[in-house]
Image (cartoon, rainbow, N blue to C red; front, side, top):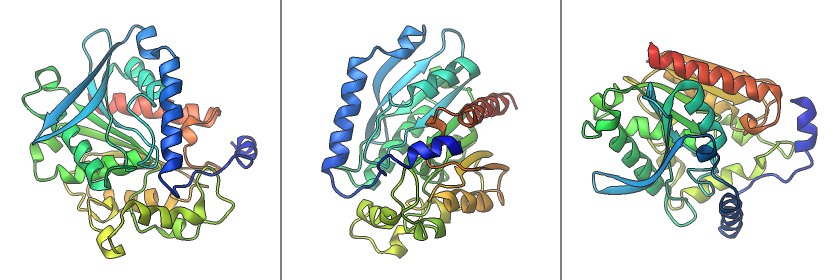
Length: 305
């Protein structure tokens, strides 16, 4: 990981300063996906793109199914700083989960914050969760559910769980939550506030300003209100969680503080990865592969517990 960090040091840092750059990145992402074959289909998996609805809301999802009867369902929220990404961008990770854990993966194609307030993104994510956990969805009835989120997707996953608290029967269907280096305080935890120019992947000094850009018109007290900032929510009744963060990630304290609060109500397993920057599960390192393999093993254990 330290050797790979030397390469990361030469790359530009991700920052949100305007709406044009995320649009450009999103266009390039979609173009690259259009130009390449669907990996899930090539590996004999069943893929469906559909729109689901619940409580008057509607959101697209990408569903990847194993060939046989699944052992459970994974509800996946992709990352991308709320402003880039789509339901297909984590296909490599999701295909590995389908094959190793024998699960259906439902990846949520929520709207992006380029044109939509973050509250709209939360509405999309809650819509997908309600649809999946509804008693009316016969295909998934009785199957245990794991919620997975990465970075901004981890924020949306945690916020969705808090929004489900008024419906205990839905929360009880969720047997585990897997969160990778999320953002849980939209005012900035101490590690975000103290981030310097030496950060990797993320531009540390601009992060507080980026969080404020995400929530225009709100003051810090309003930004701290859950579920907008999940860190300050009530975790009673939530399922067990597995959390990862990197030692060199400006968002490190978000996970450390969330784990400390969450474990007062439910079992939490938290791992602080040495010499690791934000996004480390996508790096070509043995550490990343071991983290992903451990995560898949944890999912399988939660499904059969």
